[in-house]
Structure formats: structure tokens, C-alpha cells
Length: 64
Image 1: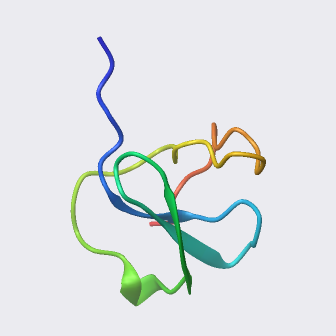
Image 2: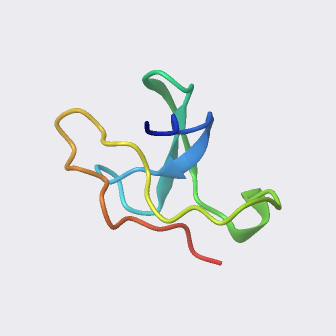
Image 3: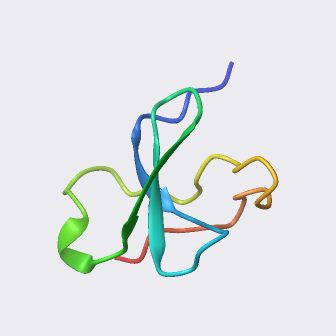
């Protein structure tokens, strides 16, 4: 059984330097610039969900 990826901002593989909102089901049209202050404390994420047509997202990580 796999755990669903929680809603959050993840690196946008189509636009380096940006993040895109994952609503828990699909990607939204809401990007934002990636900033160190935009990250919330919480469990470390090692991969983002796959963006359709934007690569697998596997191996993507959020910078500490």
C-alpha cells in the first residue's frame, strides 16, 4: 500500500526555480518562485509527484 503525496508546494520540473502546488490529486496552475523562506517546517520530502508531460519527478528533492 502506498501513501498518497500530501498537498504542498513542490519543485516545478518544467520551470527551474519555481514551485507548483500539488493539491493531493493533481497539479494546479498556481506556480510561485522558489525561495528558502517559502518552505514550511515539517517532514523531509525526497520526491515530488510526477508532473504530466514534465518528467517523472522521481529523484527531485526540496533543498534544505
